[in-house]
Structure formats: C-alpha cells, structure tokens
Image 1: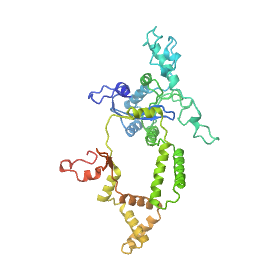
Image 2: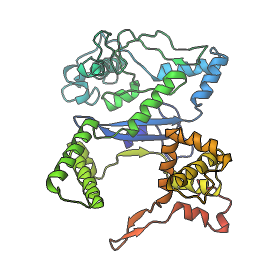
Image 3: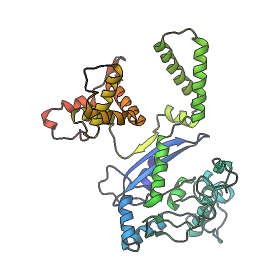
Image 4: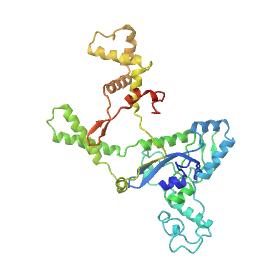
Length: 411
C-alpha cells in the first residue's frame, strides 16, 4: 500500500513541488483496510485531487453550460482515466505467462521460460492487459447478486448494479440535473484504471465522485461502509439471547437489580465478542503491527457532545427554550410541586403541545438524562493505574490569554 501511494498516486508529504501521479496531483487520501467474509484483505480509499471542485460546483457548471470547455476537459480526463471494457486481444502476441497461468499469480510479462521476446512490446502489454481484465474485472452473476430479490414476480436485479444492458456509449452531462453520466462500454466490467490494474494485478474498482444522484449514491456507499458493524445483526441478536438465557440459568435468585444489570451487560459483551470472527490475515496484520488504515493527514478527536452541552448551557437556543421549560413544567406537574409555574396560563399551550408530541418528550427526556451524567475519560498511567483524562471542555474554557483568539477547532 505504501508503494501504491508513493509510486502510483505520487504523493510525498515531504516534497513541496508535487509532480503528481497517474490520477493527477493528489493532495490527500484516506484508506481503510477491510477483510472479506473469507478473510481476503482489501482497501477502500478516497483520494482528493488538486484543483478539483466539489459536487455542487460541478453541478452548477454543468447546468449552466454542459458543453463548456470545463465540462469537455473533465469528461476527457475521466474517459482517459477510467476504463470499463475488455481490451481487444493482440493477434501477434507470443506465449506469455498471464496466458498460461492466472494473471494475478504472475508479475507482469517476465518469467523464467518466457524470455525469448521483447517483454515491453506493445502487443505483449496489450495481451497481458486483456488477460488481466478478463480474469479480474468481468463480473459473473451468482446467488449473492440476487440475495435481496425476494419478490419472484419482479425481474431480478444484481445488487452490484452490473448488467449487460448498462451500456452508455458516450460520457455526457444531463443539462437538466447536471448529473454526470460516464461512458460504459460493457455493463459487466468493473471500472478500472489500466496502470493501477497492471501494477496491483487483482480486482479493483474506481469511481469519480461527480454530481447529481450518482455522487449521492457513492457518498451513501462510503458512509455505509465506514459505519457498518463487523458483527452481523442476526449473530448479535443470537448472542444477546444466549447471554440472557445463561444469566437466568446461573443467577435465578439475584434480587439486586443493579447487580443483575451489570452481569447481563458483561455476559452480552462477552457473548458478542466470542462470536466475532477474525481471519488469519487479520490476526497476522495485528501481530505484525501493520496498519489498518492509511491517511495523508493527522486528525485529532473532537468530542462534540460535551461541547454542544456547554454551548447549550452558556448560550441557550431560543428555539429550544419554550419546549424545555414546558418539559420542566410537565415534570413538576406530575410530581405535584405547586411552587412552580406549570399552571401558569402563558405556559398552558406549550405544555399541551409538548405532552401531545411523543417525539419531543423522548428527545427532552434523553437530553435531561445526558445532562445529569458527566462523561469522564480515563487512561492508563505509567504505573498501570487508571487516571482521569483532561476534559476538552475545561481545557477550552480555562485556556490562557496567549491562545484566547484561537477557536476550539484550532486548539
């Protein structure tokens, strides 16, 4: 991965005059390593390019003039960078390693016993690329593709969006929506970049986060991937059910509610952890202290809940105050406290509105519970004991005069 970032992306944090890589000048990247169900490690990576526009800016330019020089240059760049069809085989190519063996198992066109020709000739490189794309990029439908198709009366659709009918002969912008529709010459071929595919020699996919619905779909896909749990939902529920049953069998006489609750949480956690499957590749990655993510920048955590609570206390929102006061009035009404103004005529309408809105009641109850609990971070000290970590809120509130002009994020 480090060689990919350095040599193909051309990113070097120590080089101030970046010459760029195969995608252009990369100004940032973030990649996460993930394991498939059978343990194969792969990386999902986002790359930010110098001079690129955000999806909204691209959409505005496309709607204003889809035939502008900018739109034509962008389409030409993407058509040159992203391919999605099997290149033609060479008719004048001698026998090469990727023809006799699986292309992923050999390193390029050089191999013992295949040295009687020019390994860098155009015909040989073309044939090697053809073998790679045909073996690694062409999609073949399996039962997994249609596992979400429950209605037998409707035609089955591949959940990966790959189909013979997905053919678009030319890339273009929709003048009404500004959406970028990229060229697709073969609906069953995953997008690939020729240079990257030749280098990594395995299955890959590459997408441009452009404009319109396609950009939203890619962002949804990325968000879904980085937030999904490694533990399947049905496995987690089964583990929880098993933990509850064992607790009833082992501790039927526990009357202390707090003791029983703690034991239940412990058993649920242990049960779910025991169901977490780790492949040999993942275990080796951690044992060898290899990275599970790659990033061009360093980030610091900002615990926003505590900051938001401080802002709400110091600078209360006028929109939230009526509902919050009504909630407090409702509470005092139910507890029978006559010293409050819950029965005041000016608050009757607000109280009635809050009482009739279950969602508002639930939200305010959650907020009220959170306000009563102060989160305390802990860390392991040099002697192995647990010590309280400094609070970001207190660090900001009591910052020295020398950094008073800095905002929270800059500190």
